Length: 219
Image 1 (cartoon, one colour):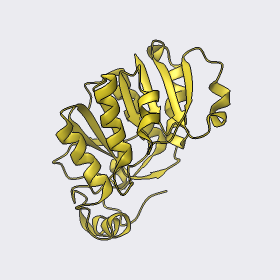
Image 2 (cartoon, one colour):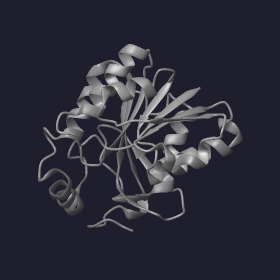
Image 3 (cartoon, one colour):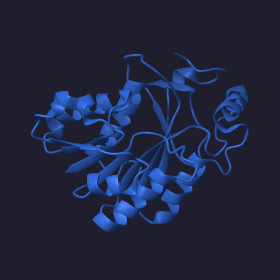
């Protein structure tokens, strides 16, 4: 299986990469890692299962180059671009290169699915009060309308706690929790790579149920 990670040097992506390259169940996974400066991942350069590609997620030509052999593509940053260049670039690359499995990182609150005081605060902080028409919402809509096998990952507010603990919710569910560990997000991505049917044609909310009812992020 060939996996391309776009924006491949974040904290969560490094957790995912380490698991994919060191756990036996992922021994047949090959990684193409696209980032602006490849020397940031020089530690992986000699790994036979890794290809490093320099590129920008807002440049369609870079995305096409990085995904030419991909079976699954993960955009590891939220598409906040005013014209959704990352998502449009991925969809154009899918058409040219023939891959269909896309995972995109997004954030909680896309559908006003976060209840209570925290939901109100999150809308103000992340969406200036209303998610409708914002870049993350439009990116999600593009994926839905593409006909491709997509998953939108709605991330909560993140912390660096070591435990993996989360509840998955779906597109029409109320979001559970306000925060979760980066380790938990990495676990969901690894689960999808191990079983690409997980989250197929869906939007997955990821939250630590122990943080349900909090009014602010839990760090």
